[in-house]
Amino acid sequence: MKIIRRYFLKEFFRFFTILLLSFTAIAIVAEFFDKATEFYSENPPLYLIVQYLLLQIPRIILYALPFASLFSILITIGIASRWREIVIIKASGGSTKRFFSIFLVLGVVISLLALILGETVVPAATKKASYVRKVKILKQSLKIIHRQEALWLKGTDGSLIRVSGFVENEDRILKTSIFRFNRSFGLEERLEAGEAEWTNGVWNLKNVTVFDFSNNTIKKYKSLVSTSLEEPKIFREAMKKPKEMNFMELRAYYTRLNKAGFKNLKYLVRLYEKLAYPTINFVMMLFGIALALNTSWGGGIRAAGLGVIVTVLYWLLYSVSISLGNTGALQPWLAPWLSPVVFGMAGSVLYWRIKE
Image 1 (cartoon, one colour):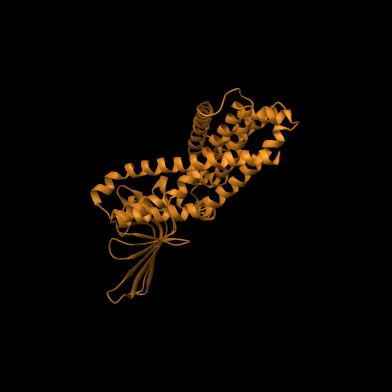
Image 2: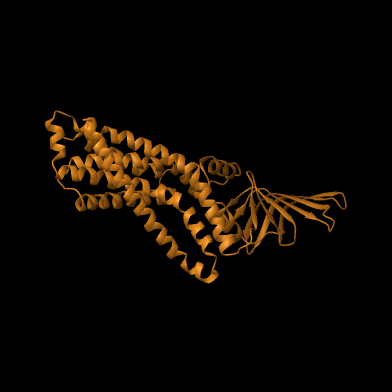
C-alpha cells in the first residue's frame, strides 16, 4: 500500500505543479494586458515591468492554491478510477478512506503554508508592487508616509501633518496634528483636532486646540475649516489596502478606527478573511476526494469539468457572502467562513458515504 500511496502522491504533485504554474502564468498574462495601457503610455524600462509582474506572483499563488488542490485531486482520483486502480485497492482489502486520508493531512499542510504565505510574503510583495507601479512606473510622488500608528504627509501650505487614520466610507480622518514652521524650521504653531470631516469641498476640523508658540497662546474651537489638507482622494490612493497588510497590521488599524467610534465592516470582514481563506485548501481537498470517490465520472476532461462546476459554485457563494458581510446583512465573522463551512460539511457527508 505504501508504494501505491507514493505513486498517487507523485501523480497528485505532478498535476498540482502543472496546474499551479498554469494558473499563475495565465494570471500574470492577464495582469500584463490589464496594465498594458499604463506601460505603453509611460514607456518604463523593461526591468520595472518584469519586477512588477514578478511581485504579483505570491498573491496569485495564494489565490490559486485551493483550485490547484481541487483540480489535482479530482484528476488524480478520476484517472485512477478510469483505470480501475481504485478497484485494486478495494480488492486488496484496503480502505479507500484510510488510503486517501494522507491527502487530508496534505490539505492541512497546504492550508498552513497558505496562512504563512498570506501573513508574510504576500503583504510585503503586494505593497512593493504597488510602490513600483505608482512611483517608478507612473512616476507619482509619494505624498503619504506610513508609520505604525499614523500617516505623515506634507500639507498644501507646507505644513507637516500627522493623521491617525482615514475612514474611507465616511470621508473622515481621525485625530489630526498640523505643525507649521517658520523659514528657519522653527515650530510656530501646532494644531490638534479630534477628527475631521470632508463636507462641501473642505475639511472641517472638530474639537480643535491651537498652540501658537509665536504669541504663547492656546485657543480652542469646536469647529475649524482647514485648507492644509488635500481632498480625500489622496488618502484613498495612498492608504495601505487590506491585501497589503497582514493580520496584526489590519487588526491594529481596525482597532484604532473602532476606538475612535468608526466601525468599518469592510476591514472587519477582511480581518476574518485572513484566517478563513487558507482553510479553503483543506476544504477543497476534502470535497474533491469525497466527490471523486462518490461519482462514476472518469478522469481527465470530465474530472476537470467537475472541478470547474465546484469552483464556480464555491466562488459564487463566497463572493455573495463577502458582499453581504460588507453591507452588514451577514455578521462580519460569518461572511468569510460561510463557504468553507458549507462546502466542508457537504464534503464531510460525501466522505463518510464513500463505499468501501
